[in-house]
Each structure stands twice: as structure tokens, then as C-alpha cells.
Amino acid sequence: MIRNLIIGLIGLFLIAVALVGGVSWFAFRIYVPEDRCAVLIRKTGDRLPPGQLVATERGQKGIQMEVLGPGRHFRNPYSWDHELKPLTTIPAGDPSTWEWVHSLSERQRNELRAGKFKFEGKFPQIGVVTRKVGKEATAGQIIVKRESGITGILEEVLTPGTYKINPYVYDVKKHPAVVIPAGFVGVVTNLFGDQPARVSPGSSTARSGQTPETPGDSTEAESVSYVRPLAKPGERGTLRNVLQPGVYFINPKLQKVTLLEIGFNEYSQTKITESENLRISFPSDTGYLIRVGVTVIWGIHPQHAAEIINEYGNIDRVLDKVIGPQLRSICRNIGSTYSARDFIQGEKREMFQRALTEELQRICRAKNLEVLLALIREIEVHAPAGGQSGDEVTEDLKRTIQESFVANESRLTKVKQRDAAAVRATLEEERKKVEIARETITAETRVMVANILAEAEKSAAEISAQGQLEVATIQQEVAHLAAQRTEILGKARADVEKMKKESEAEGYRMLVDAFGSGHAYNLYTFAENFQPESIRLFFAGDGTFWTDLSRFEELGAARLLRPAPEPDSDALSAERTINAASRE
Image 1 (spheres, rainbow, N blue to C red):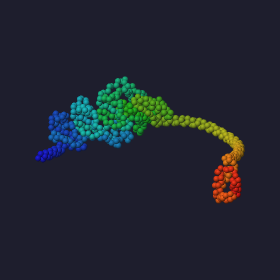
Image 2 (cartoon, rainbow, N blue to C red; image 1 turned 180 degrees about the vertical axis):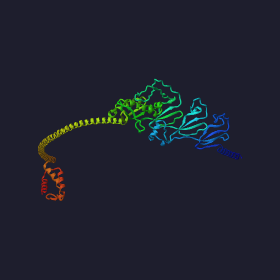
Image 3 (cartoon, rainbow, N blue to C red; image 1 turned 45 degrees about the horizontal axis):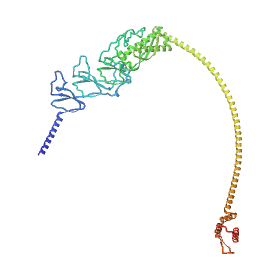
Image 4 (cartoon, rainbow, N blue to C red; image 1 turned 90 degrees about the vertical axis):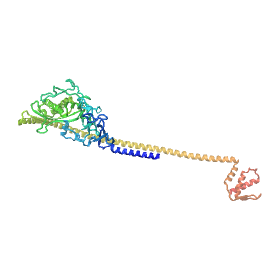
């Protein structure tokens, strides 16, 4: 009974859990898609103060600052409601679409120098965030920190990515990021901050201004203009440190970045068309009108980029206020000291170009500009009187100078020809001397070669005879040694043979001494060498003798080994019989 009750309670519990889960899944669930976020709205709680749209404190009724990201969330539908809002996406850009300087036209380059051109392409962007809900900002306070809770533009920016932003609390404006290409630097200007101290007239940051250009004006004007000094971190104005090539996420409401091309550039004052003639005109010291076309190669060092932008604003102003006026003024001041003839002759033109370059370098260096070269490209000389008569005078002057140059060159040519003829004669004389010396050396060489060959043959014959003599001498010595060898060998063989014979005789003598007598040795020798196979001796008594050769040896040996008895008549007769048989 209790068991059934427990099972029933468990079943009811599981059913209740299933019901609660189902109700929670369908009634409490808030589903947020992957490209959306959910702004929560509280339906119960304290009322908001008049004019307040978003709840800033816990428990207040209305739109909440909290935002739910993509996914599933569970909230009480009685107390909560929500609104789906799109996510804030800051694009990262596509570097393959960026347009750089090498692809710009001349017009675009001019706009870039004037600070009006913007690079094309899908560049990275940033999000400038403005807080709409929070504490009121003080008077003049526009940029605020994110953690301050004050309304206004946040100092921090949103870098490329996806964010869940409550549109009732924050407003996001997209701006392109700062992209500095290679060959450029970025000059940063703080738009907010403390005001830098004003520069006194005697300080080193004061710049000398320029007066209107006239032929008699000097390159340095006496009036003084004041330039705002470079700002320090936290101050308003241009900062000294520049940005190197790269991508930077800078708040455009807080700082301004000006692109400045570094390295050398070209600035020309030449004749482009008949209506657009930018050549510089000035009178010579003889009254002729001189018109020159000049090209200046100039540049900016990165360490002076901030000072250039701080003082002039952009490159066009540098050209309009410094290089252009100074170039015209220097050309007029220096060119008026040369005559018209000097501008036609090459040597004086080079002197004028060198003086122009040095003076322009000196002045521009004081203004943080670098000048590499001022090149004179076009020169026109016009007579003081205009019109056709003036052109005739100019042509006469050019013709006179040309004829003078031609005559001078003709004279120099004749002098060089005369010198060349003298040199050719000297060369021919020296060539003959060389041939004579060559023949002399050849004859002497032949004589020396013949003498050397004769001496060599004589030395060879002497060496050959001496060699034959030495060979004969050696052969004689060899023959003598061979004879001595034969004599020594013959004597040695004779001595050996003699010693052998003596040794044999000595051996026989010793054997005879060992056997006691020569007769005994003879018997031994006979017994040792005699080997009868069929002779047998039978002794049947006195007066009878038969021979058995097969036993004769044993009998002889036995007789030899037997002690010799006293000789008697019978023994002597037997010995004589044996000796006789052996002789037979």
C-alpha cells in the first residue's frame, strides 16, 4: 500500500515538473536570433521620473539598460517584456580594395597635398559612441570616459567587430579608421585640451614672414609672425610625435589626423602652355629680359612633419608661402647680377644654377624643408626693346656669341690638329726606332742561340765520352771482381773437397781404430755391403765345404761379433777360404 502511494507521488511530481518545464519553455523563453539583441522592458516596479525614458536604478519600471545577446533566455512574462534590435557591426574592411598613392592621378595627388582627397576602398571603420542616458555633463564637457556614467561622446571607440548596443542608451556613428599608407606619416592634432602657452617674440619658435616679391626684395623679410607651438600630451594643438604607416583606431571627435607625404617631391615653374606660363622673369645686368624654367626637388623629413602642418596646414601652403616665393626672389636677386651673355654660355649657367640651389637650401633648411636640387631647365633671352626689333637684337647677340664660340673652337681645333701632327711625326719616328731595335735584338738573339747550341753540343759530347769512359772503367772493375770471384769459388770448392776427403779419411781411421785393426774393418765393410741371397755354407766336418749364400751373411756377421780366438790352423784355413770366395 505504501509502495503504491510512493510510486503515485513520484508520478505526480514528474508530471508537475514536466508541466512547469513546458510552461517555462513556451511562456518564459525569450529567443534572440544571431543577428539581433533584446532590450529588456520591465512591466512592474517604480515609475520613472518625468522626462526619463530608461531606468537607471534597479527596480524601476520601463526600458532597462541591460541587453540580452543572441541565444535563449528565460524571463517572467508577467514582469518582463523585450524588443529585438539589430546588433551593431563595425566592418573590418578589405585591404585588396584599398587605393594607394601609386594608383592616383595628378589631380588626386594635388587634392591629397591640399588635404581634400580621401583614399578609396573598403577601409576599416570605428564606432563613435554617444551616451544618451546618465549624469549631466558639465559646461563645455563634450568627451567623457566610458566608466564616468556622464552623457556625451565617449573617448573610447568601438573597433571592428559585433556589439550588442542598447539604442535607447547609446548612439553609434561609424567613421573610417585612420589608415596611413607607406610613404606617409600622420600628424595628430588634439581637438580638446588645455591651451598651450603663447610664444614670445624672442623665442626660437617664431617664424620670419615673407614680404611681397619684387626684384629688389631680400630673401629674408624683417616682419615676424607668431606660430602656435607644438602641443604636449593633454594640450590642444598639433602633437610632435607622428604616426607611422599602419592602421589606427582614433576617435575623430577627439583627434584629427592629417596625412603628409614624406620624401622628395617635384615643384616646377616652367612653361606648360602658351596661356599657362609659370617661368620666372627678371632683368639681367645689361637690361635683357631673362626667363627661366626651374624644377625644384624638395622634401620633408618625418621629424619635421608636425612643425610643417602646425605652421602651414598642408603642402600647398608650403609651396605657396615658402618654396614658390623664395625661388622667384632668389632667381631675381642672383640672376640680376649676370649678363645676358652669361645665360647663353654653358659655364655661367651652371654657376647660376649652383648659386640658386645653395641659397634655396639655406633658406628652406631654416624652415624645416629639405631641398635636393634646383634645376634650370629652360632659358630665354629677350632684348629690352620688344617686338620684331627686339627679337632681331636677341638673334644678333646669339649669333655673335655663336660665331665667337665657333671661331674660338676653330682656333682650338687648328691648335689641336697641329699638336696632333707633331705627335704623329714623333710617333712615326719612335716607331722606326722600335723597328730598328727589334731587328737588332733579333740578330743578337740568333747569335746567342747559336752559341748556346754549340756550347750545349760540346757539353753533350764531353758528357757522353766521360760516360763511356766511366762505363768502361766500371766494366773493367766488374771483370776483375768476376775473376776474383771465380778464383775464390774454385779455391773454396777445393778446400771443401779436401776437407771432405780429410774428414772421410779421419772417419775411416777412427773406424779402423774402433775395430782394432785394418783387417777387422775390412771384414766389417765386407759384411755390411755383401748381401748374398743363395749362398749357403754347410759345415759337415773336417775336409768338407758347401756353400749356402743365403746364410753366408749371417755366418759372417756372427763371426765378426764373436770374440776373436787365438788363431789356429783351422781358423786360418777357414778365413782363407772365405776371402777366396769373396774374391770370386
